Image (tube, rainbow, N blue to C red):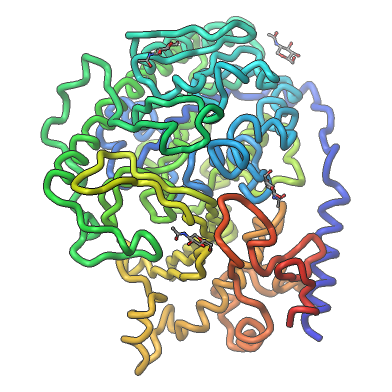
Length: 598
Ligand SMILES: *[C@@H]1O[C@H](CO)[C@@H](O)[C@H](O)[C@H]1NC(C)=O
Ligand SMILES: *[C@@H]1O[C@H](CO)[C@@H](O)[C@H](O)[C@H]1NC(C)=O
Ligand SMILES: *[C@@H]1O[C@H](CO)[C@@H](O)[C@H](O)[C@H]1NC(C)=O
Ligand SMILES: *[C@@H]1O[C@H](CO)[C@@H](O)[C@H](O)[C@H]1NC(C)=O
């Protein structure tokens, strides 16, 4: 039968990967070292692309957007700080890090340590490749004044970390340098404190002369949060009191007229989305006015970051390093305010939360407001940086290097993957103020898997929620994701004439997207990059377009199980996650093998 040959082939391809998995570090030739560029990586916190925050950053525009390339289809894969950052620094999807939350037991710094990543993440590999490595700002959540030395984060020649519970206090931050005790900066603006630390590391790096990596991770424009240590409380809502970000004094009167863009999906008359999002009430005028204030505070708080970018480039220029340094500018995840009636926050699969800024400037990177439409993700960044460093790309990476130079960008058109794997487990929380008789903005059961898939002719978002609701948006015709084509009301409207997508009936497209998601939700390594290959091991299908061929109808519509959940969980518990490709390529459900289940 079809499936056993499929399983066999998938098993074989996994064996092939495993064969050169692990100790693939080969020593670097000296000739390579001479050409290793420096890398400055600026990582903001919760910065949006879709509410136009970059338009309010003239110095980012001057140094990065005007002199580099913008990746307009860059995505994070989990729209929450800690999982997103762990994925970024390890090059793995969250289902392969199993760091899926900001706090224990499913996430945070202790989980990062427990999963063994302190010896297997980017700075460690960069040091092995001969780099000096420096970092200042927020590394992970639940990295605290109590656990920072148990153990210290590995891989850094110099570090100065923001620590919980003061990470998000703009005017009362705690930073912890190298092996020293934490230092409190009461009354000083956290981004200004950070800028000085970043400049200091830049000077030290330049003085040493070896190639360097410098990570700069300001907390702006994240909400200001008064937190208690989660360990003491164990309840995210009790442990954190959110308020709008606080700008530096010199920026607090800027942008008085700015407000959240009034796009068609801003606080709409009709609800949209699925699950809890579809049940959100429309926001009243006081709520909208407060959220516009929240928006302005974000833009103001970003001004310190804008100045920091200017300061970094001024120093790189003075130190004579501009021609030998790549500068990356991105964020951990996006942000929404008011779209789909959502209160300020992230954690969703909508474009606002997952499609985020990425701008790169450096030797050979096209400049002059260059924009590329290649699909890239945070999982691709670790391989990108190792590639720049001339270090071997690890066989267990779930992504592939992002092309940076003009020639490579051109070569990737038509061959680069067209999908993004999006996953989320656990809570969502509104970070604004409560209005009327609202008691809580905490939502549990915000667990879902999704994919984005984008080509010249199609542009979809497909998701399955843990309550087994489905979403499908055709972003070509519905760029604001207001019409869920799989909501029961949409399906009943269209039951006379089948909806067509890209000339193919809706049901046939969904069958392919679901199969793709089935592979992606538990993929490892190259299967995450070339998922169609798992479904078509002979290699004759490399895209949704190829898979839509009518000769595959039976396979997709009748031979594969559908993605579904057994129940909602706050973490990655396999027995709640329905059918899987397991490590042998077989499919099972609730612990039963595929062949027992059909
Ligand atoms: C940075 O750390 C690495 C790994 O410990 C070490 O080999 C290298 O010499 C250090 N660089 C400096 C400038 O001390
Ligand atoms: C500011 O930080 C210090 C610790 O560094 C802490 O003791 C104090 O309570 C904090 N202030 C507020 C208002 O949270
Ligand atoms: C969350 O999911 C669980 C299991 O599916 C269910 O029992 C519970 O009622 C759900 N809670 C909410 C708030 O929807
Ligand atoms: C992920 O971590 C949680 C918490 O430690 C654990 O219960 C779960 O089994 C892990 N999931 C997988 C797939 O290993």
